[in-house]
Picture 1: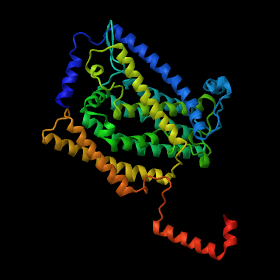
Picture 2 (picture 1 turned 90 degrees about the vertical axis):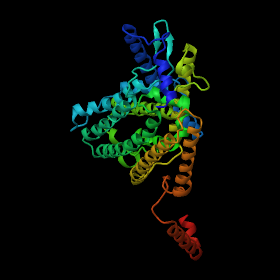
Picture 3 (picture 1 turned 90 degrees about the horizontal axis):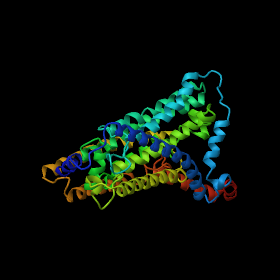
Picture 4 (picture 1 turned 45 degrees about the horizontal axis):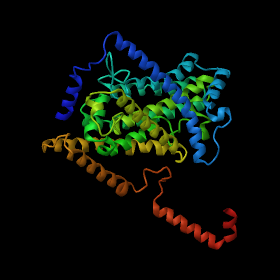
Length: 433
């Protein structure tokens, strides 16, 4: 951590006018924050189902839900329908695991939110309230540990259903999530190197002084975003559901609320991934053009503004998730696994070595992280790497769902053969079209 970051942390910890709340007040405010976060989170996830249907209708130039309360009560109608449906229990299922699987998918999706800071500290008559449920010193490591538990729910759902389609969907999902978890974890190591800490508040404060990590660590953001799409089973990585080839995937045998819990967990994971992208690469709740939200003096209006900024960033990434779903075709399974192991993983490892080498070189040259030239150098390195990756090495071959293994010269040869056949047999060619 640079001298400037250490001085900022010292100011925040040693502020005699606004110590953090303690004792019974701390526990009361923690319970209040849990209730507010859980309530907003669950209502927000329900409304996201409506938002997805409205956005898909807008993209496809059609009407979305407009019957129940002009569309606004559609999530409530869907929830009531799932509550009223019959709970089926197919023959041959492992009943304890069959019931436990949706819960194991749902709980980690909610638990990860407890350590994500969602606003600047708020001053009260009892002291400073940190707008995070649990400000753990190992915050980001906790997120990686808890979020990885979600795969157990999906695997158990596929295995306990006693259904071959559900089993294949569960195996696909476990392979996909384990493959991309590695890339997702490795992509955050440059962020932790730059912040010098695994606490999410430290990462936000580092970006307040050194610029957003999306500029400093652009390639890491690209890897994290692609891996986040795969981890949340969203298109173009929704192969575990696989409606076209495996009926419905790991939740084939589920009905009523147990069925709904899987989709609630998917949307909850999508919001969590959006919050992490905003926190790690886009400054989190930090209010631009002011340092008062980081070092004080704190104010309530500034805390509310920081919450609004953080929510706006989350909603932007949620929109990107939905936008991609309705515009990008699905990968083939071999393309998905090849992208994770042959491209994402080596790229993440090379990028860690590159950023560590650049940081070591800048430190040896006497350039501190607090200086303006530091982010400029990191941004230049990232720009050069992006040009090398996508403009020179890739050129649309690897990062493309439509990419095939056939050599371009073979494709041209087949096109010439097709043209010759059309000349020889124009009537047959026209009928074939």
